[in-house]
Length: 493
Image 1 (cartoon, rainbow, N blue to C red):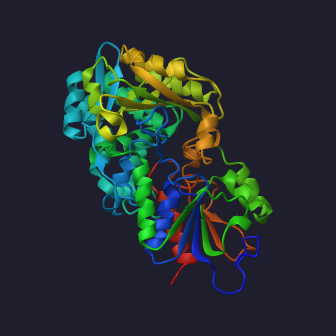
Image 2: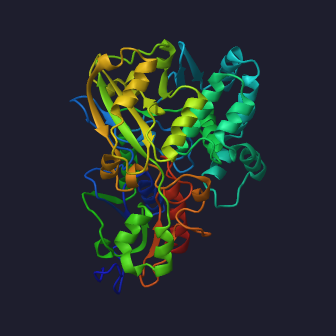
Image 3: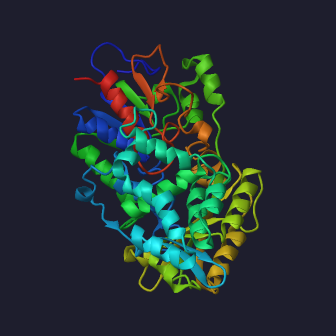
């Protein structure tokens, strides 16, 4: 049993492993431990598991909105998730007609089909040669398959496909504005690349922003950009079901504030940011390690709006309704300017807006004849500026009459985003700045940055959140990497 300071007394511990936090990474960590035959307990402060994979009636009765994550290419592609029996535990993947649409002024829209050939043909029809360039920049990554993806999602391990990884890096390390303008002639391909690059929450001239774009584009061609029937919460529920099927336990409504709140265990895996780790462990952490955690940087936040609509969004280009995800922001120059302004601490009048229209493909999300819409833009970390009007003006720009369809809206500024998920410090949904400096050095520069030095405790402690490599996203790799290390070091049979 615990002695009140997180230490184990004589005899057997209460659990082989305790996981703090039931976000996707924490749940995957628990799955890894439970499936290895060990006793695991997950403690979650919220009333339901899921973290970034929750679904709630945020606006009106019967309208089910994904509170954070909405579209899940990594659910099918990540090595931490793709081999799990998720469908046996209630997950049904829905593939929209196309992964991505990007409306442009003048009644045009760029479209990324799941088919690489179809996408290249469309781009060639707009600007001759762009299809060939798309195959070179994005298609080559897709054709590398899961092998390259696995190396990218486990960036500290020895790569299994070093030549493919090096080839990816030659282009991926570059800024997206440079690659977009040099490699593509037409607005369509440039806009598609820019919108995907903006998922990295960095100015588009920053190093490695092309890597974000080409990875997301490749996933669109490799597995699509699916959503989960009934909402992202179903993904969390499936992971909980797998844990329980292997004898594990998930307790919600239990906040861990100190080491004394952690039951005795051989290993503890914490799905938290460095800030929460310091709050929990306090002076038990070595002073030098605490100082290094204190230098960890968080990136921009998000301002999110969910809408209940009386019908589909009236896109000026009807084909945009084929897409589960819509990037609203105009040309590469407009998106680059907006993201640069956010990076400089400003709030663009024309923000880049990420939109998901799940209910067009999943009728369980809204009452008959009605629709939901999900969207957010980037803002400086900790911003309290209301971006609702600017976001809706951007959608209205490409969908005249959109505002007339709104029945209700639910708004979350960065404070509300962090209140929903304590790991989203200042509204940062990536668990830390996602620039090149913090891709592998999360939260510190170390061979095994997820290992937490608590030398006076009997338990082995590990970070397993998006604050360790490979960073943000619903891929579960932080949980898998940390759990497998704990299994080798502390939970060997």
